[in-house]
Length: 177
Image 1 (tube, rainbow, N blue to C red):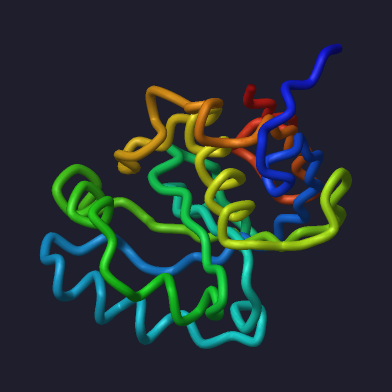
Image 2 (image 1 turned 180 degrees about the horizontal axis):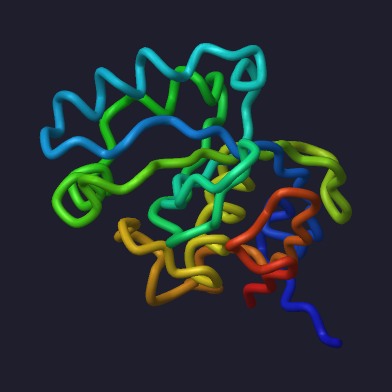
């Protein structure tokens, strides 16, 4: 395979492995955006969220024995230079979509951290933006707006993401060029 090399060394192709953990049942999506933010603030307090990384919000249905049936992927986000637990309750355009289209459904959360990074030794905001954009582009969450229809390789690096552990409903391998 031929890699495209960018003028900036920070745009060299990379391979990233993410380890997903979760799933946490948060609450039933309310029909009020203010209540959604308040619920998120009150629920995101575990040590599991005291790191930077990526997260996804999804619907699901509780089943017997504390398990759940995975539903629809709603939103993928990132937390760079702040804890996931701080980022999730902050304003997101996609949360309006969650309230408008998914109130009454159970909301679940999974989070990830970078397990391994090949091709570039430094974790940067640019890298986080590229990982998030590729995850969104390849998995099409219902409530994200940016990157859903295009991964602009002229602005972003070529990237391959391999997801480990609790990554469903996103794809195991996501490659963006």
